[in-house]
Image 1 (tube, rainbow, N blue to C red):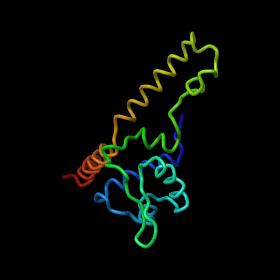
Image 2 (cartoon, one colour):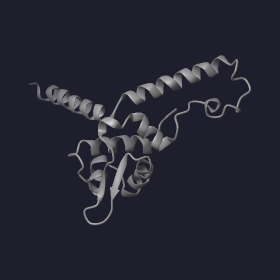
Image 3 (cartoon, rainbow, N blue to C red):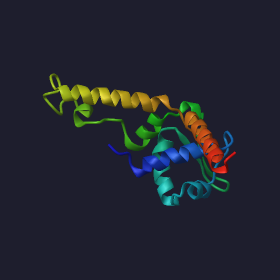
Image 4 (cartoon, rainbow, N blue to C red):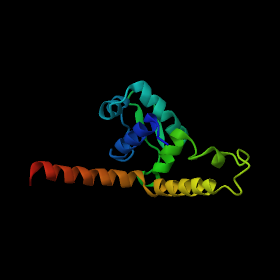
Length: 148
């Protein structure tokens, strides 16, 4: 399973919004410039995030985007499911009637466990965690490059 490019950009854009002062509206052009995404693609990316209640949009002069929730309340799983739909590793996990072998299939058990663990990991990381980690990574990187 590979996440779509839209999901990758959605995560980056949400982290960028979370790095801005609380409740500040960020212009579309600034998100596009800093995240290297076209305005049309950003609109496409943000539509499901708005629908999921993760991002708010403000129209008109001075309009733009802002987080609809505190970054600590938004998880990686929330973003992934807004963009990709419910996390499912195999068809048999989507539709109980898809395969008649589910009751005895050992692979089904593995798919189920793997999906559960992946969701658990994605849910354990909030956007606030990602902002903090990025800041720490940048600090470590700057120490390495400046030979301090």
